[in-house]
Image 1 (tube, rainbow, N blue to C red):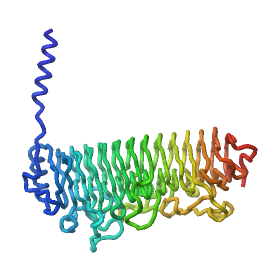
Image 2 (image 1 turned 90 degrees about the vertical axis):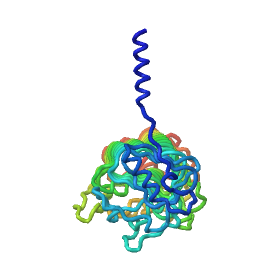
Image 3 (image 1 turned 30 degrees about the horizontal axis):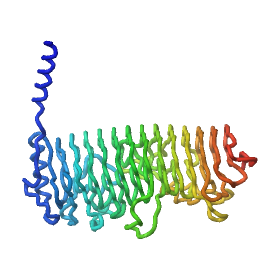
Image 4 (image 1 turned 135 degrees about the horizontal axis):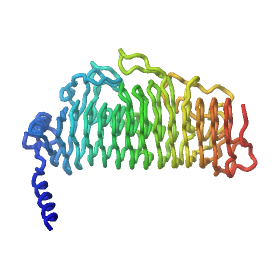
Length: 499
């Protein structure tokens, strides 16, 4: 009995010591929710006061608060209440160029621009049920700056070299460029976020760039450019990343590691995701009908090493190319003073339990460049059903050289419709494909699998669901050590032929 009383006393004492977080309402600092008044000064004053007093919660109440750059500070949570909107100003003067950060990267224009910005802060959060609206269609480049994606259009969220970050519950729309960019950050959790981003060029949904220990879960992304994007635009690797339980739509690449790869990628797990066509009826930026280019892209083209990647339980609907794995040698430096990167490496990649249907005819591909190999790849329990219906002349001829494109931008649009319908493998070492089910909606005359300069190839327990097909299942060219089973449903057609 004495022990029970002592425990109860300790629990009550501990509970009484936990002070509720201090709350700072931005309206109390002069913010006006009319969607017209610029509230930058008031919001930043509330954040600074909160941080200076040991931290707490800065409340954004219901209404539209228009703002320029908001500076996050240590131990501050911005909480957007139901019905609240942070609306980005479109006046360049409201987004001063930030000092160049200590961490340098290829995308750095010499100082960044963002609606919500922080460098080197800790214990921060952006939470709630409100909306961050980047007013993206009205965001124009800064004339004096570099062009392309370094032209001064503000990101919705940009955090650099920050630690212990939480992003939860909010909706983000209409960014001026990339929607949210986490650069060289550590220990980040993003959960239950919704992004709808069809307002401007380069409208990525999220870019995880040179970060360590990042968990992204239970979120929905619909975007004009890449969806969930892992990058390494500087010296730091993107490593120890978990992406799970997300729905992703993109007019470009739904889930991608690349193109920038300087620091590499290590220990990446992607699971339980749906990749589907965009809810946007047509592309409002480029004014042309577009489909998603890839479902999953893994790319090393600017040096660096990719290793320890596990992808599982993925459903892909309607993209032109479900799986694209590429080792190239664009060799772009992340800063002008950096040494030109050496050819990178890709190894230890496992892909399982993938369903891809109603896809285009680009064909899945795993390709490196002459003298280099992608190593140790397993593909297991995968279903791939493309549209088919191609006629002679509508796809590349295997008898002609298919461009290596060593320096080119890594994307399957470089080739278009490859001479294989299911997998094109080139410069790969140690690859096993098991439990593959494949077919096409309309007859496809192409050879399902083409392997060129491949060492140690295993294809087992596959099955074909179509009624007509080419004469051969596999074409082998310079393939050493192979073991290939005839697919179920293939009938009397040839298993393989050598070129």
